[in-house]
Amino acid sequence: MSLDTDTPRDAVTHFEVERLVDGHALLDVRLETGRTHQIRIHLAAIGLPVIGDPVYGVPDPGLRRQFLHAWRLAFPHPLTGEPVEVESPLPPELQVALARLAE
Image (tube, helix red, strand yellow):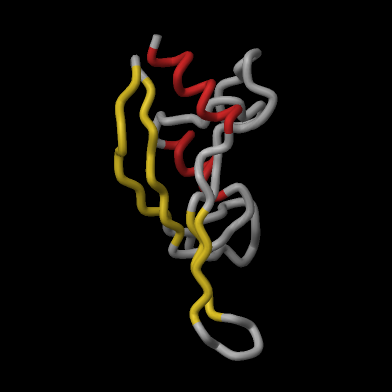
């Protein structure tokens, strides 16, 4: 829940550990709500900051982005209401970063 407002709203994040790699955790995160910076703030708050996140996380000089990737999105189509589901594999730069951690 955001505390920086007069009208706070709930923010709910679910996660599971997919893999542990040399003191780091690769997580599968599912949002129940969609607040700005929600994943980054929630993970930082529980001591699991996102690698490459210069604001809430851990900077990584070998990574030019945050280690966040939406591998699966699911939502109702805005016009038809039909379910839409898309998936995307982990991008090459994140695969390289993950392999570097495992060395």
